[in-house]
Length: 151
Image (cartoon, rainbow, N blue to C red; front, top):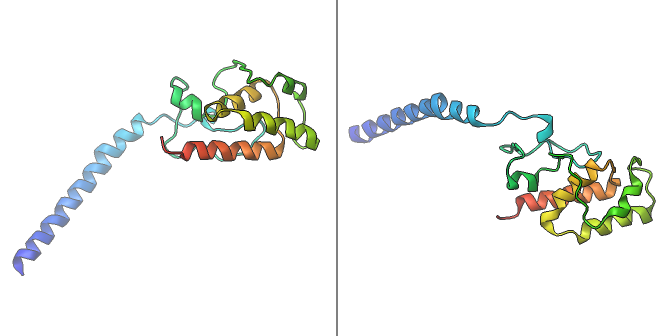
C-alpha cells in the first residue's frame, strides 16, 4: 500500500511541476508569438455582421493559406470572376434587391470553384457591392464549410 501511495504522490508532484512549466514558459511564449487580433482579421463579406475569426486564426496577408480563408480585403486589388455585370449594383442596399437580381448573385456564387469563393467575396467588397442578404448568408455557410473541410 505504501508503494502505491508513493507512486501517487510522485505523479501528483510531477503533474504540478509540468502544469507550472506550461503556464510559465509555453503559454507565455505562445502569447508572444500569436499575432494580435485587429479588425482586419475578422472575416466579413460586404455588409455582414458576422462573428470574428475562429480562435487561433490570425492572418498577416502574406500567405496563400490566409488569403484563401480570410474574407476581408487584404489589398485593394479587384479581381473579376466573370461577373463584371454585378458592378451595376455598386452602392445598393442589401435589402433592396429583387428576386431576379438576387438570383444573379447566386448564379455567380454557385458557379465559382471552391478555392475562388473567398477571393470573389473580397473582390465584391473592394468593388463596393453589397451582397443580397440571402446570398451573403449562403456565402458565409460555404466559407464555413470550406474552412472545416479536411485539408
